[in-house]
Image 1: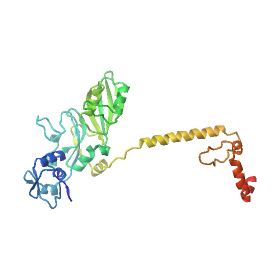
Image 2 (image 1 turned 90 degrees about the vertical axis):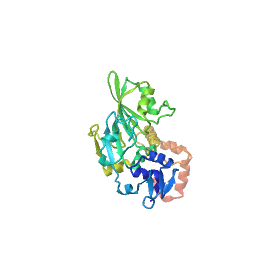
Image 3 (image 1 turned 90 degrees about the horizontal axis):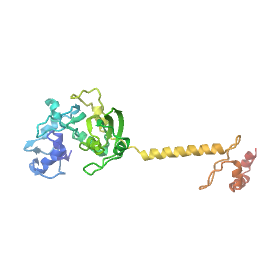
Length: 320
């Protein structure tokens, strides 16, 4: 089956898709002996010979097994596979037997919490793509006590230093002390240091930040610095696209329900005690009659009577 070259290289565990694109543009990839230096080229690993920097990667694709890891990242580790400053990496916490793994998204150097590492390019693309609406939930300790109007600004979306407005976020106040406050923030996007920049924009710095949930994944029993394998069911559920909520439709249905109940209550108050209202049959564009006398005064009573006279059986039942 033909796939894009950058996807094949990522499936072989040699690089992420973004890094694979750079390798292709640099002319480091060949297909059947021909150099490929442009994106969008497809190849079939079963029939084409694909080499990266002179190394045949077809055998890697045949023996490679997908690995999905959930790590509780500690503070002081970089969410990357390499660093020129030689800082500690999250991949240093993984055993070499698992092979080359890549972090899905990133957590800041000073942020702790849940992070997925995998060699599965499909999972990486699904979780990081904003269109799939995979929620990330964080808990943040903020310096000072932000006022509610400032938090409401963050909920609606705020323009950061880069000039781009953030998407609406769910922010819940958890607890407060005399000098700090804890908030739970749910994001639907993954911009670099977004939560820290959001609270900086309202004049309150983030003292501590941890990610507690990715999609439905939450593991409060996983110690900091430890990891576990994701089950096939968890991977399947994580890659199931969440339907968008139709908030406008729910608001309209709720509004119409309130209107209907109010109208029913008004009609019941206008009816005399011991008498039942006339049938609510009416012509299009005309209102219903609330009392029999009002119906008799309208011209529709004569129309109904004429139809009854043309049908003796119906008239007889009405008289009786």
